Structures are given as structure tokens and as C-alpha cells.
View 1 (cartoon, helix red, strand yellow):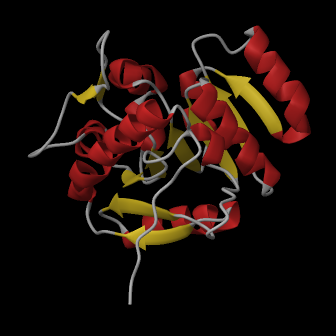
View 2 (tube, rainbow, N blue to C red):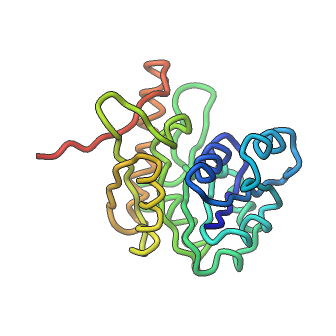
Length: 214
């Protein structure tokens, strides 16, 4: 499959490399597609790796990963061209974080709205699925924990899109828990804050979530 990644930060590059590792062709979209960090990423990931503008990546992808900082998300989508997302599955990895000088970040949206719902409104003809936002980028691909694979919670309105995303997650080594429609992002985005708070208190980024059942 051809996959476009909108965003060239650590999260975008990690997921793009992981997707290449399971056989996909990936184009990262960036404001600076010829930057040194992207040249290094292309060299490390071989002929299935390419870069371009946001619009190039969105047009290229049969499936699209949205991995931008929240503050730049709307503009990145505008530059990518909403027509390039029509009828495509979009994995929304963003978190609507508001940072402060002291303490953990807060949420710009919450309780009765979410970043996932906002992305779906910005891309009304796309099939948005919230995923990957509850864990650090170091464990997004092939998470390895002594107690077994962690759980990735996902939310979205389209069942086929969620199955497409679940196939990728399982290939990466995750268990998948579908919590329903995109409004479930109201629950998943605060889980990012919980992940961050624990990381700050323990000075470690090596943790993930697991749902225990009987």
C-alpha cells in the first residue's frame, strides 16, 4: 500500500519507518522535504521511502497518517488540500496539547469535544481513526514489554477504516481495542496526559496501557 505521512517530526519518522518495515511505500510530507533529517531518514529506509510537500504526501497515500503538532495541524491539512483526503482512511495520531513552563501539558479541547472530532470536521470526506496517541514514539512500533503486548485503543466512525488501522497495529505487535465512534477521542486524548504525567514522575518513557479482563 502507498501511505502518506503528514508531519516529519519524531513520531512521523518512526511510524513511516515502521510502515516501510511491514512492506508499504511511504512518502513523508513536510514544509522542508529536503531537510537533513529527512535525507537521513530516506537513506536509512531504502527505495520505498520518499519525501515531498504536504500535498504530495496526501495525494500519494491510499491511507494517510496525520502526525503533526496540534498547533500546526489545521494549516498542514490546508496546505495538503482537503480534496486529497477524500474517501481515504486517516490515522489521527495528534494530541491537542497546550504546553506550559511548569508541569504537564493540558488539553486545548476536552470533555465535550476532541482533536479527533475536530480533524474529522476539517476532513469531512475522510474516514478518521484515532490511534497511536496514547504511547511514546519509542514504543509505537514493535512494543516489547515483559508482561506481553500492550493495548492500543482506537476510535472512529467507519468500521472498514478501523479494520485497516487494526491490521497495521497488529502487524506492529499491538492488541487492538475499538471503543466506538470518533467521539471516543475525548477519552483517548486525556490518556496521553496520563502517559506524560507518569513519564515525568518516573523519568521514563517506557510504558504503555493494558486493559485487564476476566
